[in-house]
Length: 302
Ligand code: ATP
Ligand code: MG
Image (cartoon, rainbow, N blue to C red; front, side, top):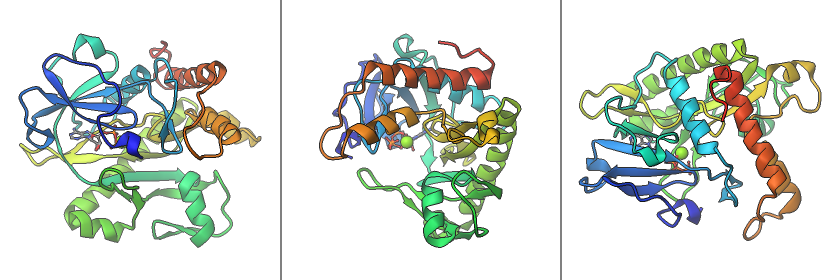
């Protein structure tokens, strides 16, 4: 949407850094002396409290969200055993210490590496049309929320600014980035997903699906995990106990589902969405806190 397309959102002035780009939720900065993103050695990624749904940034933000998601990303990076873009040397500016990371600027691959262990969301929608997701045929008779026989890789092409990401087949990613990289992205994504699912499951949380992004380190060429990882913005998490009980709330996700449900009931999807009531904001904030407490064992309390 237009809101995502540029620099029209408020962002902080951070000495030594210059804002290069604002997504719907995060602000990307480059060192003051870098002429643009492509020539920067490092990037500062600041996670705001903004929340988006149905492609719109909503008012107000969710207090604490940016810090919680940053903390969750760091927690996962420490546990995945895969090279990450984090720069352990430089210090994050104090103003944003709890909700930003400094990363090496990577040559990003334009693929959203989605892995699904369960059928839901856009995967469920596509399955109902074709009994397949991103060209991968699936068994007949599956329903929303069903566990898949094994996790599947369902990539999306990261469309240029302002355009919608598009689900693609693995073969299409080979055309886009070449066979060696396409294969490496798929294998790394499936492996990371299996590892993360096992860790989440030990904590009573189901990782239904998630999205990774990777880039090549420009200095070494090493394939490196980028962006945020395994946050509730990039993943669908369910409570394992509720899921097993099979009730109507078995697919209640640990994210902005509360926001989406409220909006769906109070907005016809035309024009500017209404402001979120305090009660919805607070319940959503509590949901984000609950996920991080479950996963990290209470270390994430805000
Ligand atoms: P949306 O608002 O839909 O998420 P977006 O993905 O463009 O749109 P952000 O996620 O806020 O917005 O932007 C972060 C951007 O930074 C993404 O384009 C991501 O690919 C890129 N990125 C993440 N890590 C790195 C890195 N280490 N080097 C360079 N670019 C990176
Ligand atoms: Mg993004």
